[in-house]
Length: 305
DNA sequence: ACCGGAATAT
DNA sequence: CATATTCCGG
Image (tube, rainbow, N blue to C red):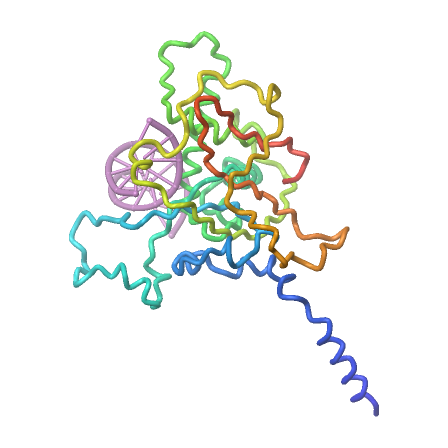
């Protein structure tokens, strides 16, 4: 039989149609474990994937210099220590490495809110949310912490809703105001407030796993002591309509020169493209002088995002 | 074991 | 000073 011949050709063709590594890149990006990347200090968002590629920096991790776990009591493994430098050795640090500070970006928070909305306040437990978010690197603690804040925010909002007179006695801490702007970026899906209504079958799109690491520039010690970024709460926040409109100010150091000859994909064919992933918004703490306006990249929920 | 809240560190 | 991480309690 000539089956052999046929097989041969078929086989050869198959080989010719080998997909380019770049094509799989966007999808396999999640294969990289965040811990590993962090441990190795690999600029995944800078070197591994070119800016042209669709990154999904929905997750930002702050990279502190070191030291963040001063054991109050004696260390069991006291032994000799200081193996901090051991990490650089090349052993398997992905096991006892401390995770960098996680920065909740509006996008990430958005995903968080979406998950909560889909699950319902009742089932909105850290674990479930975390699993639903599918954000690689996100831990239950992270979500729990944020969830807690989110709840307080909702409660706070509900509490002062309708009470116009107020004024005095409003124990609104500055912290609340700050968190407000963060949560304010995300339009509450449904009335989380109000009664506990079980979230109906919301069309929850399958979130594609996101594992992005973005290390922010090292912060100066002085900055730490003073204030990270975040100007004092503005006396009054105006509507975005006034002047601004859209501001695409992206002071990011990304966007290398045009010397990039590595565009992703074979020209992105129309019709079928990878998830917008977008969220390319880098939550860069743009230092605004006294008059700054919070970015308003929160378009309307066109039903997806 | 997990969630929920408060305390601490950065 | 604000935020995220961490610890404790139910």
